[in-house]
Length: 224
Length: 389
Image (cartoon, rainbow over all chains, first blue to last red; front, side):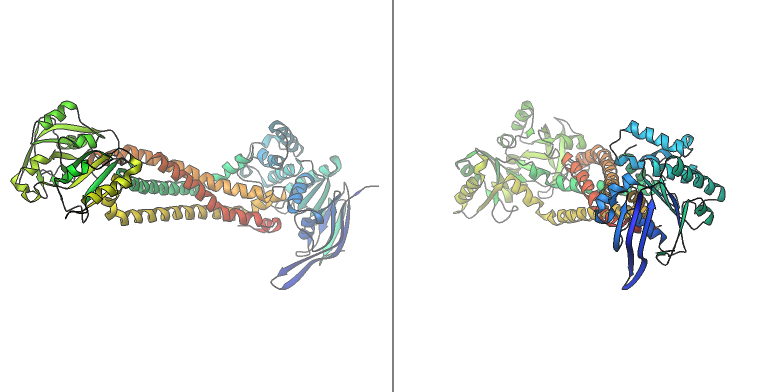
């Protein structure tokens, strides 16, 4: 039986706009088995990104427990969470979020600067990650010299370079054309199947969601 | 790549803005160094004043004179090794080649024994002692007036009427950079014997004494003044430094204004830097959110911002110091010393001023970056990721 890698229990998240309380997540439970590729869909404002942020340790729930990859995130300090994220989570964002003044290789190397690896070891990791995403010949290119699809593949290389257990992707195909989106989804599928990465993806795109092994739907703060 | 690579690349992300900020800091450092150099130059005479010399003047005012016999009494005060005197002559160049220079009528036999930072070759000093109408000039003044030893020279005076004919007996040089090399010295006895100086006959402008122990200057000063207390013309004795500062008293307001302007310049430098840093941070808030998401702690973010702020300040500071060295120390400084040595015998930005300006730039770089750095460090990751500027 596959071990649960994400276990959320009784999650509530409330934001305040002035004195008005906005309940985004309402008593939500979620178990994600390790090695799965899950897609989370739902209308705007349904709480998808908030749920993703809580799983990734970027945000804390108002109530409930969050256990991810064996760690109880609700008891961790901000500093512990930052360290945990650098070792456990790979992020893929909608708008790629590459640093424009760094080359593709340097962007991929960024998370490794927080490790004890030597420069040569970091370079080897970077080369491997870029080879996996098929951009080993674009190492010295700056983001402005890459297409949108290539930028997202560099971002995926950055997400996997520290060998995280989980990859969280927030609308990873939202800024891409169909062809590039398909390439990125194929790559994510490979990461899941060949490298056994657990992928949790938020998307509006039904075609993207179909590529996942599990589709979930969130509406008004509750999983359907 | 390392973290410094990222910080360095960020510096030139907005090349034009960074260059403008560096230039602004450079100009601030230039102005700051100029102001501090002017202040230091004004005080140079006082700062370099000998600690074992005392000046004695009339208690009421420097413009009132003392009887000639006072010099003999002064020499009898315990602790006084040697003494000399001078009168203000108010010398002027009739051809107006020099806008201002000091002219003193001094005792031919004792002046250079007490004022030993002025150096005259022995043969020229001997010639002066043998020539009542002889004069000794600073080397800078001699060069400006185009005279050499043995030349005839006509000088006029603000105080004494008519043309005064002199023979250049000697030219002095200086042991210290702060000594005015633009001074004109005539013999006191020559002035005293001239009928045009009848109202100041047998009177001294002020007396200068060299004492045996500088640590007892206050005691000896009191003893000197006590000796003349019973006379009609009472005295005020002070160290040479105090004497020099009393001349600068009239400029105190200007110097205070310069101090104030220095602070304003520092404030402007801080605001320029702070504005640049704040703009950069605002533009990169989303990026800082990404860095935080992938594991960089707030301390790293603060470090990036402060590092960038300090780096701009240091680059601007170093550029400013280079310009100060070229413009002040190699350009206007020597020109001022040559042409206005009466006011600025030594006008160079000292190492202390230059290092002080660089340290100020670094400190202000930290101050300018502190608030944006702290605010960026406190920002929630999710808020930073949402921010698109």
